[in-house]
Every structure is written in C-alpha cells, then in structure tokens.
Length: 360
Image (cartoon, rainbow, N blue to C red; front, side):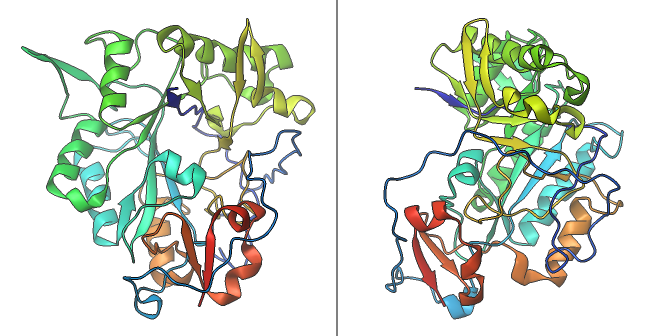
C-alpha cells in the first residue's frame, strides 16, 4: 500500500491554541482562541495497557552529556514558494540561509511519518524539524526535461533543498508538499503524475491543500466534504492504493464545530478519507510531539517560515536558544524515549504503550 500525506493549509487567518505560559511566555498573542472539538475517531493504538518502561538504557549515549528530551518541541515549518513576497515566500538566498541556520543550530530533517509516529531517527543530541510546502507552486518544485527523463529545477525550493542535503548529508532529507485537484500542480513540465512520481521516488511526501483553497470556516458541511474529497478522489485516480493521512486548513481556518469531523473522516462520491492529523498555520505553538499528552492531533501548529515577525521561524530559533530545555533532543533510538524525570507527567498513553521510557 502506498501511503501519502494530506494537508490543506495556510495563509492569513491565525488560530493559536493552548499556549502554556510556562512554555511560551513570550509567544505572539492572538485575539482568537480555538478549542479543538472532541472527535469520535481515535488514533490507532497497541493493545497493551501497561507502560513499556525500562531502566535499561540503550548503549552508545551518555544522557548527562547530550541531555535528550523526547517530549520536547518539534517545529513543523510552513513554506510556500521561492519569490520575493514575504512572509509566505522566501527568496533563494533567504531559503538557503534558513537551511544553513537550521543546520548550524543542530536541527535535522525528519519525515512527516516520523513526526506522526514519534519514531524519530535523528542522531543523538540533535533536534528534529519538518518542512512543509503549500499551494503546489512551480517555485516550490518543478521538473526540467533531460535526455534521460526529468530532473528537478535547481531554482525551486526542492531543488535548493536537494543541493543543500547533498552538501550536508547529515542534515537528513525529505519534506512534504501540498496541492490542489488540478493537473497543473508544480508547473507544466511533464504530467502531474510525472511530478508526483519524482517526489515520491526521492523521498518526499505528498499532501492535499483542498480542491480550491477555500476558507473552510465559511462553508456548509457538503461543501467542506467536497473540498476535501475532490483532492482525495484525484489522488486515487493517479494512485489507486494511496491512502492520505494528514489534513491542514487553508488560511488556518477550521470548519464549523457542528461538522468539524466531516473534514477529517468521511466519503465523497465513493472515495473515503480518514486523517490522522490536522495542521494549522503560524504563528502558533507550542510544538509538542505526538507522544505528549497535550498534543493537539486535529489542530497541530506550524511555524511560518519567515524572519522579522513575532512568532515566526527566527523568533523561535531565538526562543529555543534561550530556552533549550523545551527543545526535543534526540537519543538516536526510534523505539526508546529518554526524558528528564520531571517531564514524566507529559507522557501520552500512546507513548507509554509503544516506547521504552527511560527517565534520568
């Protein structure tokens, strides 16, 4: 079975949910507070009901040296294209600077699957980060025709990222890209399937940005289902076995509470969908991992990939440099979780049932 990533994101409506003062005392304030509705669907869990705790630490690391904290924050960064149009776009020089800053500060790329499962493969002592790109733009990703087929346009965000990862192989690799139900995603060289195939073959994850990028908060229930379902149906026409996993909200706007869950689980013209996570847009926080009991599965935050505004990417770079204890610091073992002893109360049932918990 092919597994894809669904996301419906982004632009101007800001919703900041659950920002504890003890964690984000200086975070950008919002005049709107959203309470996540209770959904009837729950994430799949193991059958065990006992915490998978252990006092036997994996060999090869000294927690007192690297100070791992696998309940710390993991930033998910929201980008769009490569152009001079802040704050949603970055120039080539700015995006390269972002990547270099991440690398220099000890951030390492993870896939969205790692983020969704909590099985982080980042090397010990480093902090995972995930990059997302909205709108299906040809400045985000595009192909160039070659004698042997296709290659990535080096001036797009993915082209820049590919070059950076080759120069810094320990940075990790991957990102997720979100699009509409149109045949013109990511330019016009090749077909949509040619472009999607290239991304999938090179380790990227695909996602949905709704059919028309409409504001879900203004739509009726049938309209919401159509916005979500059309993209799902389009993907199914290209990849019959692909199942999409993630939903993000255009403009950061969620549907009416009365039918909130219809955007997350439902059926459109015979095609079903059932999403594991919903992502909003920045500025927002805190960026808790899926293993934290307060992780907001259907209203998870992203940070805007920009510089110079309160609550944007560089604001958080500074925040975590000043408050390093809140960062997720990897132990290097996907199946184990090193945490400071005083963080134990933050463990979710999912974490207790699926990981070896090592307190220090």
